[in-house]
Length: 145
Image (cartoon, rainbow, N blue to C red; front, top):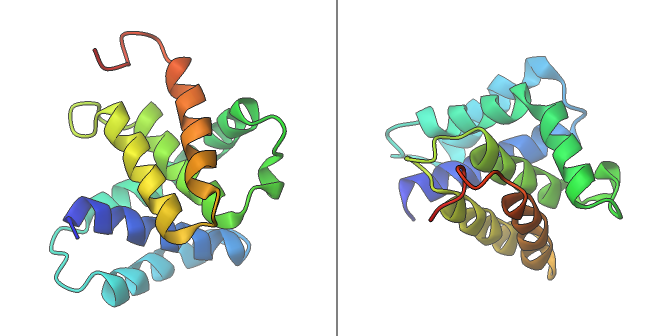
């Protein structure tokens, strides 16, 4: 598994656990550190995991508003915890991440893969629909040629 994909998996699992346990700020660091040890032995560079986790948490309310706008028939608390956190990671990369490091289409494809791995039967389609909607509404300068 490529290190960035593994980093996204660890970030998603950590955010899932943090979200499931009530989003207690003091617990997040310990959750991430434990998951890096458990799921990422030999990962080497842990900075991408931390970049995703801290980026999602710092922009959580803005990201959740984007989800609510892009999927109005799905209130944020009714989206499964896995799908909600995959969307958060995908949207963080799409909206706030470095487009040179992770082009928008790569961010979307990676989120779909996470959804297929960790989510339910229709998770991949749901994630694709929401992220695709957001991508279409981005300013053309942010989109790929």
